[in-house]
Length: 436
Image (tube, rainbow, N blue to C red; front, side, top):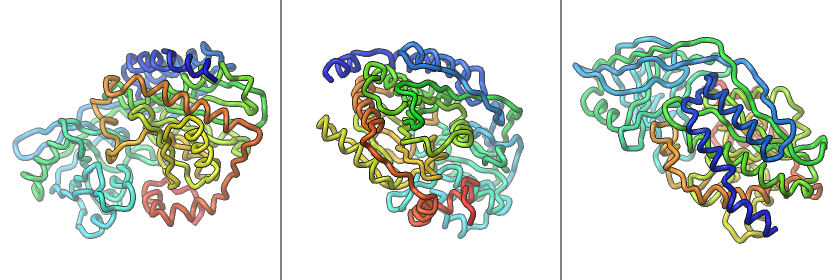
């Protein structure tokens, strides 16, 4: 054990790959940069010893950012378009809806209005309300345009996609504005006419998933995943270059322990996550769910020192994480609730055991993520190998023939989504996959 731990601590494989990813530039879904990042990841997995490293392509709805603006009074305020916003212009009364909680939409006349909401939720609220849910509440209530106001200070307008799986392009123009611009709009122009304009190039495109394997050629497999795409406005270091770097570092460490693997381990770096989990949905639609022992999805790792794992109501996943934590005397936070955002979800929603692996944080929302400030300097290099040691041990443990992680019936997931007040949001965003 000492040898592989020492080699992981001193390895520069993962961090070196992270630097390559952030230096690509634009890794937006469907872009040349996303393809380049996928090719770099394929080559990195092959270089550390994983076999059958390859790309699998699929079609997506392409979207390229053009000009956007918010005009209020006699000033034009800084903003950026939300990916998959339609092109268009809307001039109407601005309604500052605060946090944009579901009940706030019900209490306000939004027909034909420009709706502005914050990107966070209040501390008293019982769940996170996703950006897309806030957008589609606005659409359903007749809004003419949508303004998404960052709660993180620093003149950072947030990005993040709209659209649904069936209708990838949203219904009304949508932009992100900084906390400061949002404060100015709320103070000076709430109830006044503003104009929101978005230009975008909307076309067909292709993306790709990266696959590679280690371990015996068994029918069962453990998936170790991330997403390689990022928003076009920043380096995408936190979201999710670090997750893909972790996948490469785990492959590097597991290659040294391959004789301990009793189940095949498949590494997958998904494309097009940021525009609706398209890559992982494609994979979930084309693979045998019964063959998957567990999913270890890395999306939000390395942002802090301590790992946080959402376990989606699978007690055996929590037990496995706690076993590793005790073995190393290192804390791992486990969260039993469901988390229907990120690339584990297209599998977990049908009962496949899956972790969403992140780092603990006291922040609400993404912090620097989805802004211009998602850059390499926000990460501490020491956190990557430390977390890689724990996750390597976890994967070896999950791949053991002695470890059994039962799948869950989908109706149990439905009941949990209802009980945890998540179903409403999934229905309005078009993400509800079940027959009611």
